[in-house]
Length: 483
Image (cartoon, helix red, strand yellow):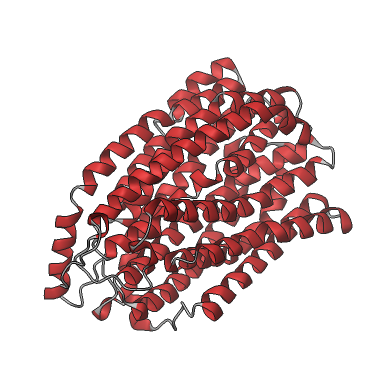
C-alpha cells in the first residue's frame, strides 16, 4: 500500500489519489452542493413528466382522469424505484473502481451493470403487466377510473427497460464525477415532455392515452442523450464479456437487491396511503395525486441525495479516505436540513397558487393545503433517512437501508395512517408524515456507529484481495478477476 500523502489532515489517505477520482480532493460541501443540485435538477425532470401529464390532463376537465393518474403513478413509482435501486448498485461499484484508480475495471463494471439492468427490467415488466388489474383493485380503483388507469399503464410500462437504461447512464456519469452531464441526461426528460405531451394529448386528440405514448418517446430520448455522453464523451462503457458478467454479478446484486428493496418500500407504503385515501372518494385521490407530484419537485434535492452523495462516499471509500467519508455525511445532513426548512416555508406561503394551478376543489384542495402547511416539515427527517441510506448502500451496509426503509414504510406508516383515518384524508396525510420522524433519527444514529468501523472493515477487505485475488468481494476495487 502506498504511503499516505502529506496533505491536509482532512484529505489524508493511505493510497495515492488517482487524478480522475475528483471527489477525493477539494471541498466536500462544494461536491455535495454540486452533486445534489445537479441531481435535483435532473430528478425534477424525471418527475416533471408526471406533473406535466397531470397538468395537461387536468385541462381536460375530468376529475376521474386525475384520479386515474394517481392510481397509475403509485404503480409506476414502483418501477421507477426498481430502476433507482439498480442504478445505485451500478454507480457504487463503478465509482469505487474509479476511486481505486482502475479505469479498465470501471468500464467493465459499467457495461455489465447495463446488461443486468436490461434483463432485470424486462423480467419486471413481464411480471407486472398481468398483475395490473389486481394491483388496481388493491389500491381501491373502481369503474371508469380503473379502466382509464389500466389502459394508461398497459401503454407506458413496457418502456420501463428504456427508463432503467437511461437512469443508469445518468448514474454512471455521476460515478465518473460528471455531475453536469448526468443532469443533462435527466433534464432532457422534462424538455421532451413539454413538447411531446401537448402534441399527443391535444394535437393528436389522444387524451390520457396520448400522455402514455408521450412517456415512451420521452424515455427513448433520455436514453439517447445518456448513451452519447457515456460512450462518446467519456468512453465509460466497455464491451461486456461473459467472464465479467459472471464476476460482477455478485457484487452488483449484493448492493442492488437491498437497494431495490429499500426503494420499493416507499411505493408500497404509499400504496397503503393511496388505498386509505381512496375511501374518501376521487376528489381525495386527486388531491393525493397532486401532492405525490409536488413532493419530488419541491424536495428534489432531498430525493436526489442517495444518488448524489453516493459517488462521493464511494470514491473516498475506494481511496480509503475515511475522514472525508465522515465529513461527507455531516455536510450532507446540514445541507438537507437547511434545504427542507426553506422549501417548507415556500410551500406554506404558496399553497393557494398550487391549488389554483391544478383546479383542485373540495377534499383535493384541503389535502394540498394541509400538506404545504404541516406535513412538508416531516421531510427534515426523510432527508436524514436518505442521507443515511446513501452511506449504507455505498459503504457496504445495504441491509441497513432495507431495514430502515421498510420500517418506515410499514411501522412508520400503517399504524399512523390507520389512526389518522378517523380525522379524514388530512388525518391520513398527517399519519404518513409523523411516521418518518423516528426512523429518520434512528437511521442517522446507526449510520455514524457503522462509520467508525470502516477502517477495520477496509483492512479486512484489503487482506482478502491480497490473499485471494479472484474473490468476488462486493467491495473489489476492480483488480484481478473481479472486473
